[in-house]
Amino acid sequence: MGKIVIDESRCKACYLCIDECPKKLIKKSEKTNKLGDHLVEFCDPNNECLGCAMCATRCPDLAICEVYKG
Amino acid sequence: MAVQTFKLPKSLKEGAKFSFCPGCDHGVAVRILAEVLDELGLTENTITATSIGCSVTIYDFINVDAIEAPHGRALAEATGIKRARPDKCVFTYQGDGDFASIGIGESLHCALRGENITAICINNTTYGMTGGQLGPTTLLGQKTTTSPTGRNVEYYGYPIKIAEHIALCDGTAYSARVSLDTVANIKKAKQAIKKAFEIQMKGLGFTFIEILSTCPTNWKMTPEQAHDRVRNQMMEVFKPGVYKDITAEKTV
Ligand SMILES: Cc1ncc(C[n+]2csc(CCOP(=O)(O)OP(=O)(O)O)c2C)c(N)n1
Ligand code: SF4
Ligand code: SF4
Ligand code: SF4
Ligand SMILES: [Mg+2]
Image (cartoon, rainbow over all chains, first blue to last red; front, side):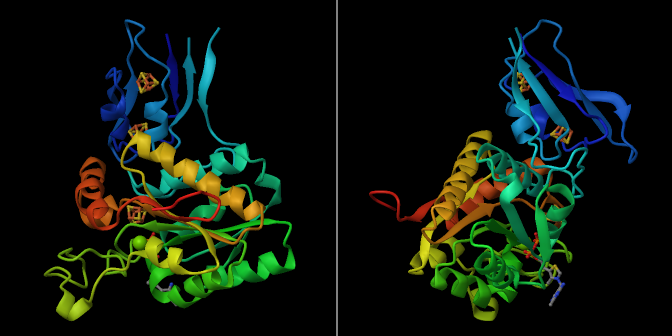
């Protein structure tokens, strides 16, 4: 069981993390940034997150800033 | 108990927010560079000479002393810094235009002199900051604002393979080309940067890493499409690999 922390103030809505997650646990959220682009949210109702940090490694803007495993 | 598998490097300023366009690989390059400085314990002992281009903003984000250089002159400035303070880790972070167009003389001669400096060149096949003009690494056929019908050899000549040229310089200890198109390649890129800094700190000569990077804004692509372009077009011409490593038994 893993967990990620998203700093929404850094997210530029590039959506690279959405495709990167092997478990597809990141999706567009209802919330928007100041340009009106939809931010992303971590959605893991079945505790599938691997804590692999692929999302954070791919994120170019330090928005996925913490990842935990186990 | 939960184990933290990812945190932001301490070599980045707290609260740093990159000013790059959405999805631009510059952000990944700066982060892995900062991770390497953390891992090698070099943060407190490093000075950078910065370039002109989208790379210039690095001094806003990284926790090391920085001196701005005129366009293309980062390695001339870095030479002065390193010769005055040979105990310091000195690096440059430059674009393809900065490193291989206006700065090609400074860059090649720094390698030929074998200065103990690490240079990182972000190759995005264009002048990103100024709006996407043709640069030294623009691919044949690539449309830019100054090659609107595509780069052709007759008019513009060929793109330069930077890592191969640097490898040919006798003062070079390490020259590699890496890519950031996949997570696996991001990890390889970080290892190459680490290797270069380790060789610099041993005083073995000039070290160089060319990083294939995206410019979604000027390529007029989504960040995802831009990574496909790196894979399918750039890596065909600019082949990733280690072109010189004097610490290895064999090199490509
Ligand atoms: C002497 C001088 N000539 C031209 C410019 C204009 N200029 C600013 S950035 C740039 C090109 C940057 O391209 P590159 O080095 O590839 O960096 P990128 O923005 O693509 O990362 C140019 C030509 C300048 N600032 N100074
Ligand atoms: S840590 Fe791995 S599994 Fe968890 S959200 Fe990120 S990419 Fe997905
Ligand atoms: S990769 Fe980072 S900046 Fe891009 S959408 Fe995901 S969290 Fe936001
Ligand atoms: S112009 Fe291109 S290289 Fe510069 S920040 Fe934007 S996407 Fe990145
Ligand atoms: Mg460029």
